[in-house]
Image (cartoon, rainbow, N blue to C red; front, side, top):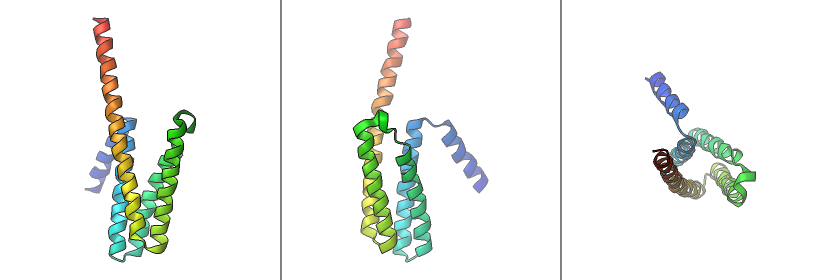
Length: 138
């Protein structure tokens, strides 16, 4: 069962566009954060730590993948937001602070929603450019 699920997940990642992978990373960070919050509510310290660690790894990867030269001010602002989210994860873990974790989830959710809008714009632009090339060739 797990092997086929892992195979399916691996296929999704290897065939996904960079935009889709970005959204999958946000989904993972948000889901792991929500599980950590649930574990925190259940007083499951080990579980909370495990899932916070997974969410932290994803946010750290998002931060490390920023192209600060090309991204300019946007990349700098994302870097600051990622650092803030990491700080919220740390507070949540050290102080068992559900408010900090809820805040991190909110920020990640807003960022994901923003990226969804950006991806839709890019896909529309690609579609229009493709149509223009077809019309110009025909």
